[in-house]
Length: 482
Image (cartoon, rainbow, N blue to C red; front, side, top):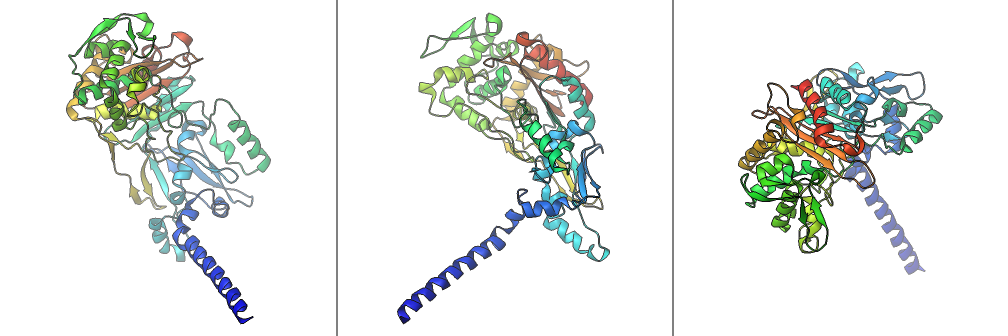
């Protein structure tokens, strides 16, 4: 009997020990993660009944504010510009949590970071609370220019400072009004949410950084840079003039746009966007091409200070060349196994502009307290360095030729400013082509890089090309920023 009691006692003690350890783990080890998780319902309801800090653009336009209400939640989030900044600010909803900056900077906006809580100690006796305010890198004039230039077409515009990674404009259409998801009436909120989520155009999903697309010939920036960097080509390397390239392991051919004959030096092939030349480059490089794409981070999710984060791209993998030679050739022209976000293609243009350094993109410039004092200043960070400054300079010269020397991007030319760019026309199964243009300016001292992607042919359907549809949009935005 005593032995049995001792066993039961031991089991009970072990159970209490397990519970004690688990409670300590939850309260000590994971406390910060649980508290900062926007899906924590208790903290969510607590935050909904509290004021949040403002979000405003680099030039002072209010993107998100809090207003007092008469209902039990006490505060409601308002977005004065509605759709204009929706895919940056995201939304704050008591039923459907948060996205965008409202989610990634939730602790700052509610004053729950260590820095803000420390400052709050001095305010306790005054019964005030320190909230974090976000000052963005986004310029409202640049954002408005992106919207106006896109003109209602489905697509995306991303512009950034190539030297810092600061995003100056980021807009995609379709978009949505985040005020619809901030309402407190449950029935209205549910109806709004399901109408947006069930929309086949996915307006709540920012096509600029959360959707991937075939980049078409805009990707030839990476192919050319990689070939030069790895010693497979120079700007003067010659490629045969062809209408189509025979693809190994198959009876298929890779044709030039419009069935034209194309070739010559790498510079000429780049300027005229010769598919045959760039398919041959990818085949020449073999698995080294896949290694180069890995160096560029093509199949990685670009880091960005928004939640959910950017979509992960796709690319051919090292070791697959011998069995997938046709796929590698198509990847060389930005088709087939290659898919990326417009944000990433903006980063590619910025890398050439920034002498081979690919910066981490960000939309927040500073976090300030309620008194306007800086709590945190975002510092530029290099994400990758896939090519040397010398290689970047050679590719820059080829991009200048595309816009200014009779290439495919002449519609992006700006009087008095040298623009460096590359067009792209992506074939999409069952749809009209996607039109791309990536660029930076001024070419001699770049202050802005841009990527424009217009989906499903834009307003010209099957006749769409990057030079016709996307390049003029890029020009309008660049002119507004410069």
